[in-house]
Image (cartoon, rainbow, N blue to C red):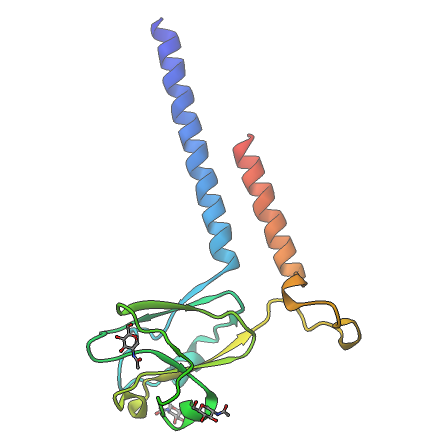
Length: 175
Ligand SMILES: *[C@@H]1O[C@H](CO)[C@@H](O)[C@H](O)[C@H]1NC(C)=O
Ligand SMILES: *[C@@H]1O[C@H](CO)[C@@H](O)[C@H](O)[C@H]1NC(C)=O
Ligand SMILES: *[C@@H]1O[C@H](CO)[C@@H](O)[C@H](O)[C@H]1NC(C)=O
């Protein structure tokens, strides 16, 4: 009786461990597919050059990625603006207000440049950032673009990544 009890415990521990590993693999794969980028090495602060920050990092931003702005919401905010208003530090007629609690995220859903700034005059001191978002898929051939929406195009990288994740999850779950 004692033996079968011990076996049950061992089986439970084993299946819990396998589940934990499976969850980790799935989370890792999800993280690899979609990245969260924290803006600025010290967050979203005044008197900081975000252009220099970007140039130092050589980071790529892909469609589906997220930006994280960490800031003091009592002093600063995060507004998405167009290029002209980014250049001129103009917060009038902004596109989107990202500001919520001071740890705020925004998803980059299109392959285009995104422009963000803080109002209250802080933009003039450098509190603005321009993020160029790239498509994961290579540009489609012009001739065949008619009925193909960008969301239907899965890049090779993505297919390889997904196949790898499925294989790993399968391996871990049914080992
Ligand atoms: C940028 O936004 C402002 C305010 O909404 C608008 O007046 C201006 O025409 C826009 N510029 C461009 C290039 O879209
Ligand atoms: C942006 O949204 C925040 C939170 O809802 C609000 O407190 C703030 O006034 C808004 N800012 C602008 C410029 O609309
Ligand atoms: C950031 O630094 C670059 C040079 O590295 C300069 O051209 C740019 O004007 C600076 N931006 C701000 C907002 O000071």
